[in-house]
Image 1 (tube, helix red, strand yellow):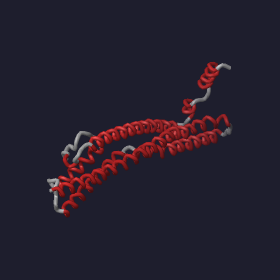
Image 2 (cartoon, one colour):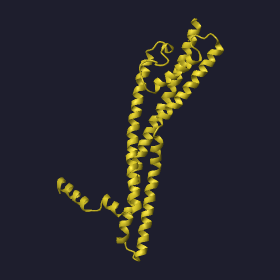
Image 3 (cartoon, one colour):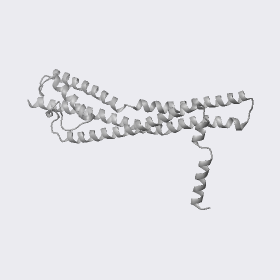
Image 4 (cartoon, helix red, strand yellow):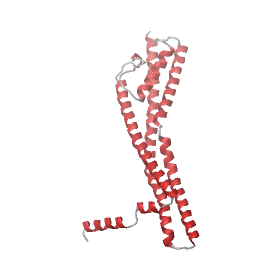
Length: 244
C-alpha cells in the first residue's frame, strides 16, 4: 500500500467515523456547558502564558539595559533623583525610589553625623524593601489566574464526566433496557469533558511551571540588584563624608 493511499484512507476513516464533534453532540447539556467553559479556560490560559512570557522578556531586557548603563556611572548619588539616568523598567524604579529616599531624609550627600547617616541608610533600605515588594507584585501578576486553571480544569472535566455518566445510566434505567448500544453514546460524550479538562490542564501546568521558575529567578535578581544599590549608596556616602 502506497503512502498517499494510506493517508487518504485515514482521512476518509476520520471523516466517516466518530470524532470529537460526534462526542460533543452526544454529550448532555451540562457536558456541553462544561466543554465550552473549558474551551474558554484554554483561550485564557494560552493568552496569559504568551502575554506573561512576553512581559517577562521585556522586563528582563529593560533591566539588563539599565544595569549596563548604571555600571558606567561613576557616582550613583550624582544622578538626578527624579530621573536617574536613561532607562525604564523595574531596576530604574528601584534606583529612583532609593535616591528619592536618600535625599528626602537629608538634602546634601555629605553627612558627618554617624548617627544621622545610619538613620538615613535605614530609611533608604526601607524604601528599597517597599519598592522590591511592589515590583514583585508585578512579576507575579496573572500567575494566580493560570494556577487556578491548572488546578480547576481537571476537576471541572471530571464533574462533566460524572454528570454525563449519571444521566446515561439514569436514562437507561428509565427506558427499562440495558444495552451497550444505548449506553455507549452517553458515556463517550461524558468522557469528552475529562479529555477536554486534561487538554486544558496539561499545557497549562507546563507553562505555569516554566513561568514560575522564570519569575523566581527574576525576583532573586531584583533583590540582589536592590542590595547592590543600597551598598553602592552607602559606600559613596561614606566616601563623601570622609573626604569632607
